[in-house]
Image (cartoon, rainbow, N blue to C red; front, side, top):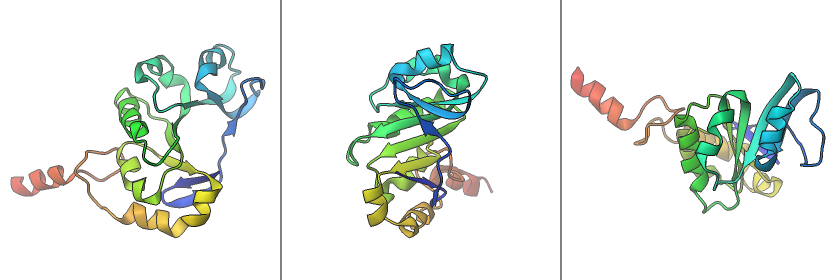
Amino acid sequence: MALISDGRFIEDDWRRLADEEALPKSGKAVVSFSRLEHALAHLPGGVSLGVNVPNTTDPAALVPALSRLGLIEIAFPAFADGRGFSLARLVRRAGFTGELRASGRLLADQYAHALGCGFDTVEIPDDLAERQDESQWRAARAAYSRTYQRGYVAAGSILDARRKAAAK
């Protein structure tokens, strides 16, 4: 899997654990949503915890754990399934400030929207990374300086810019 941050391919320092795998004593570990409650109850002190959730997850189910999570990874099973974008906005509105990662079959064309919804990183399968190299992700990140949607990464929305200009 290739991890993209700020339009560049980077190394992933999070380790995914299988459901039967023991929690590590240190480092950064990602568990499945079904294992989250157990991991929170038995988490060793030196471990940063992340969770992988389906895009159908009720955001209210994550709220009690938000302050203890360093990463929420939202699954995108297909590029045409946009439910993960909605979930990301709801998780950010609920107060999550850690890394929010889109994971799955996203395209570079969806990158600006993902950032606007609150995602920090995007993880794609290697076959997609071969077809859409780093230059395409950088270009997608730079394609829009402002958006209509009030995002979490952009410098402000088009509406905000218009209101500022009208106030002068």
